[in-house]
Image (tube, rainbow, N blue to C red; front, side, top):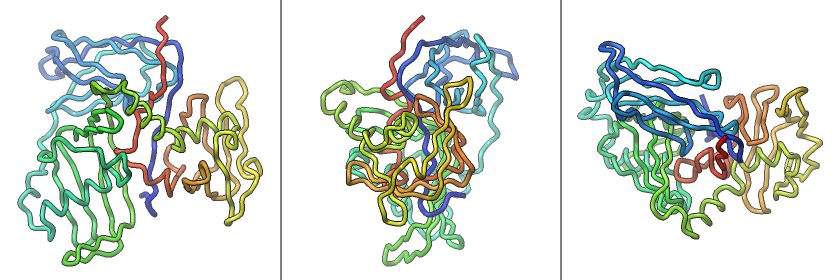
Length: 339
């Protein structure tokens, strides 16, 4: 469970030589090929769909560390992490069991659908200027349920939640796995909902819109990147936090960052091990404040800003408050170089 508004965030990018994975998708029961299946790397702009014979081809680089997702309406999703071990792969889709979400559609849980949508939008998209430029295009597909006893709001959808981000010129397909908003105090009549925690997980695919290469869109994306978790992790790897605009504080006092962070090269690899002495506050550009707390002994980062484990590395404040409306794909800034 994630508490105190701590959010798990995914990272990645830069540039590297690309590799290509090919494959074929069939229906497990009939052995027939399945066309137009979505095949994509989670939280990236890298994706494709299967052809009439079920075949696909997708390229990636070492900077892409996210899961390969195979998704098609009416079938169970398939997640593949070890794709680097294969040049080609065959996937047999299994028909999904009928979900029982419909039983909640007309259930009186104490909130109107309008109220639940408002709460969902706020914590799913965020409240930043960039988030305000976002619109959910298929809200009718959302199933929202409020648990009065636990003061919690849950969301699900059989199809991806499609978000259009005008500021970044992305269209995002977000497939919800879990979504829970838990509140400390609720007064429905006064419209008071004091948030305690936000937990949401899922997979996402980013598509560039027609105006994605305009000066304004590029500027907005660059602004969102600076001070983000991805930017911070790359700066940590390169041990240039100060040069990149980060100040580190402990107990309200500014401290030498390397007295609290230890970044050690791992032998025979490009990875680095990071340990943190205490929970610290991070100030970016003398303005944006965040906090970083570890509930693991250490985490590992690479040159591109990928880190693991995800669970146990928690950000709050500015970095922790970023939602879908503030998010860039993990291949942002990544340049594919074909072999």
